[in-house]
Image 1 (cartoon, helix red, strand yellow):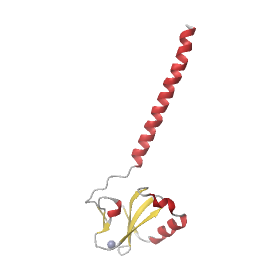
Image 2 (spheres, rainbow, N blue to C red):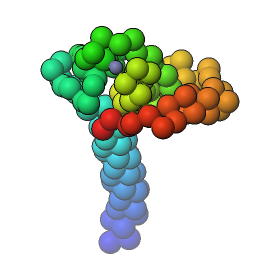
Image 3 (tube, rainbow, N blue to C red):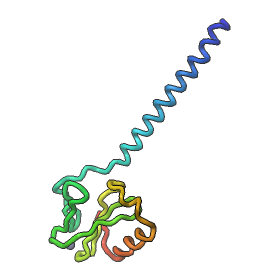
Image 4 (cartoon, helix red, strand yellow):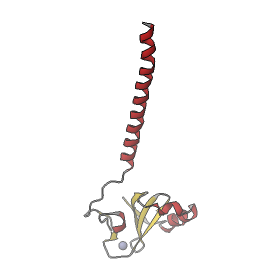
Length: 118
Ligand SMILES: [Zn+2]
């Protein structure tokens, strides 16, 4: 009986270790699923914006020039003619990492008073 108990100890530990590993993998998987951007439809129109098939293809439907900018890891496209801006995703390109909070503050100020298109 004592011998069996000695064997069960390490086995239970091993099972617990495996369950913990699986659990943390599952958690990582679920988290990364939730942080994935929504698929953007080619024909999706949001306000004055034609969303295109990826975040770099966003256009103003009135043909105005648009500009892409970051606020922290978030990417936005603004049309200065329509005075609107739209969120196009986060962390899709790494350039935001080289930017400073000063840049993000100025970017944020550049769309002050603009309508945010959801
Ligand atoms: Zn426009």
